[in-house]
Every structure is written in structure tokens, then in C-alpha cells.
Length: 255
Image (cartoon, rainbow, N blue to C red; front, side):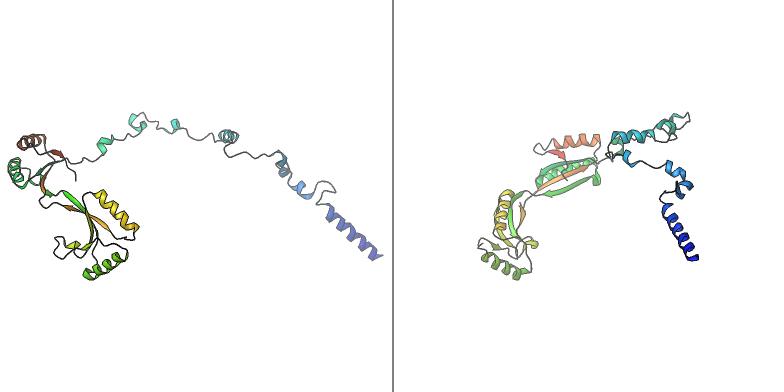
């Protein structure tokens, strides 16, 4: 008799534990404890996905913006001082930019004319604002292979050029005026830079990768005067001096 009673008690307890969470006996324990959560539940069947750029999203964001956000006019100072309310103004670009020193260049003078011009220029007392320099005209362009390891390096390059079928070259001698080119390999002299570049392109197609171009200048050269920061009075005096040298040109400094 006791065993039957124990059996039925266990059976009723198991049925109760199974049915209560599932609501078989009315509202479950969770519903009784938290009724507000049931009222706040979302209905997934009413949800819809909107694109990121949806106008509906933008209008919702505007309507939900906090009313306490300050506006541009509210953020402005309440002071009656116009300087406090007005935005800071930037100075004109012309006032910010640094003033570039002026430079005037005169010439190309021969040695004799440069001496005469310099003597007359001395009357302006320009001091270190006058610079005299020598310029030389480019007369031709040389295609060459720079020297490396002296004569032994030159012999190796000669052997390589012959292997590539190139025979028009000569070794720059030790008596050459420019010591940086001695024992280099000259591959040709050209009147224009364009012709020199075209030949370098041919050499590259034949396997020569180290060819370079150097400008050859005349030995005589010309004298050029550069004058900086001339006052209006000094500029007028310079024009008067230059009138005695009609073949010369006044221009802005090139460098």
C-alpha cells in the first residue's frame, strides 16, 4: 500500500514539473513574475529591413534627436561684443606668403665687355648683392660608360662591348681635362641631346645598360651678372649703364 502511494505521488510530481513551464495549467511562473516583459515583446512578423540610405531612417533619426542639442545660434556668445560673435578672419594670402627676393640677370658678356660693365656697375655700391658667374654653351653631347676600376675596368667593358657586336668606341685617356671621365668608354658624340638619347635606346636594345649622356660645353664661356633686391633708383641706374651694351639682355634670374 505504501509503495502504491509513493508511486502515485512521484507520478503527480513529474506531471506537474512537465506541465507548469509549458503553460498547461495556466500562466507559467515566468509570466506571473515578469508581466511587463510580455507587454514589451516585439512582433517579428511586423519587422522589415530598410536600406542604409533609406529616407525613412533619416526622418526617424531627426524626430528622435534630443531637443536639448544646441543650435548654431544658441552656441554663439550672448555678449554684445561684435568681435566675440564674429568668426575669426584669415589674413589675405598675399599677406601670408613670404616675400621672394627679386633677382635681375644681365649678360652674356665677353671677358672684355664684362670688365667694362663691372667697372660701371661699381658706382652703384651694391656690395654682395652683385654676383658674377661664368656660363658655357652646350656644344655637343657624349654617350659614354662611366669609368670603374681604372684601366682594368675599361678592358672588361671593351671585351663586353665586342661580345655584343659594338665596335664604335674608344677609351677616354688619362690626359682628358675632366678627371671624372678618365678610363671611361666613349660611345659617340652627338650634336643634339635627342640624337644622343636615341642612340642610348639602341644600345639598351643590344644589351648595354650602363650608357650615360653628358653635355660638352664650349671652353670660352660667357660672363653673367646677377643683381638682387634692387631699389627703384638702382634699377634706373642699371638701365642707364646697360644702354651702353645694346647686345646684352636684362632678364629675371634663371637660377
